[in-house]
Each structure stands twice: as structure tokens, then as C-alpha cells.
Image 1 (cartoon, one colour):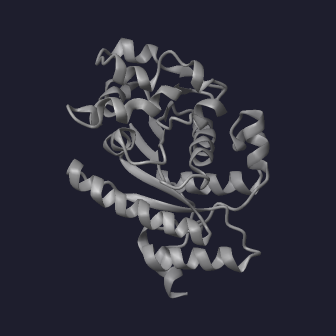
Image 2 (cartoon, rainbow, N blue to C red):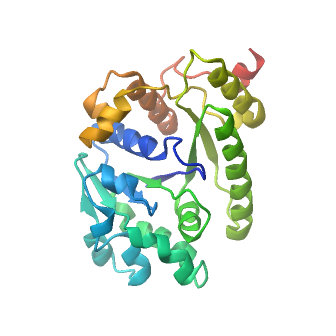
Length: 269
């Protein structure tokens, strides 16, 4: 089971959009997918039709009533409108975890152990992370194989990206685990100088960590969110859907020739 964690300490950069759009494309491959919502705001949980204020089981239960029983953990999973996709839902109570327990006594591995216990049931996992450093972010980093960092192509987002990369360095030292990450330029507007300049600065500073394409601005994302379905289901030929399909192909190593350009080539262009 390959697990990606979608992470950034800055809000509004497209974390949940990235998670749900990748899920929409993955389900079309008939793969079984586990979505994990670790954000106390519960955006992913809400997107999929559940109310974070009325979730009785899910991620919070893993901490409040610890269990390693595979059957008990499987019962916490919720069905979703996405084919072959299940959800570990977030509840508003997640916001209290840091005050209650911190990261001591193995609490940084709670989610990882739960996912491992049911990993045979799924092909892929996507974790939607909280925007702050704490026990939930520690759990996400411990549970994933690769980090995906959506970064809006604007000046303020670049500052947030720097803080995120710095935080990752600190967490890696504490976990004694180095996790590969890829930066995904989002909300790119080729019509504006600010967006193109921010993208170039992103590539200049993080050269080989930046994905070779972009996620463009697309109003269809709002329509998909309102409908509670992934963009690939609502508008498969939209710019945003096509861009996330390219991203998924890249992550799975199935990109078509010419679909992506090596970052090193882009830097020298």
C-alpha cells in the first residue's frame, strides 16, 4: 500500500482539493483507496458528505480508545461517494489532542499502526493533513511514504513553503525518518506576472523537489466542491482534472512520453 500525505502549514493552497482530485482519478483505475482526514477542520470529511461535529468514530477514536484489532479499526471506516474508497473521518474533537496528550508514549505512531493493520485491504492511501505542527502532523509524517506539498503560486505562499520545509527538517530529526517530498504548484494563472514569477522562484529554490507541471486556476473546482464529488467525476475534461491526472500518472510512474519535463531541463531553459 502506497501512502501519500498532502501537507502544508499554510491554509488555502489546495490540500483537500489535491487529495479529493487524486482520489477521483485513482478510483477510475479500480484500485481500493483509503482516505484519512487528520485536519480538525474536517474539510475532506465535509466534502464527502459527513459532519465533523457529529462523527462518533474515526481518527479521534484511535487516540481516545486505542485498539490494534483489525476488525475494530475496519469498523471505523466510512463509505464514500467515490468508488472503492473509504474514509477515516475527522471530528472537531481532534483539535483537543495536543492539549490532551502531546506526542509522548507512542502517540506519534497511532495512525501509522492503524493503517498498517488494514493495509492489505487497500492499494493506496491519501492523508489530508492539518495546517499546524502537532501530534496529528507527526502521525501523518510517520504514516506516509511520500509527502505532497501543494503551494499556491504567489509570494505569501512561498514564505509558507519555506516554513513548511523547515518544519519537515525538524520533524525528520525527531522521527529519525527522512520522507521524500514533492512540491505541487497550485492555482497557477499564466496570465499574471505574479504567478509566473512565483513559480520560477519556487523552481529556483527547490529545483528537484518541484513537480514539472502545474495545477491551474479552474472555477470547476468550486462546482465540484459544491456537488460533493471529485472534479474528475464532474468535469473530466476540465483543465484542473487533466492536470491532476498528469500528477497521478507522475506519482504512479505511468506518465506518457513528453507529458512531463525534467526539472533540470526546465531550470536550464
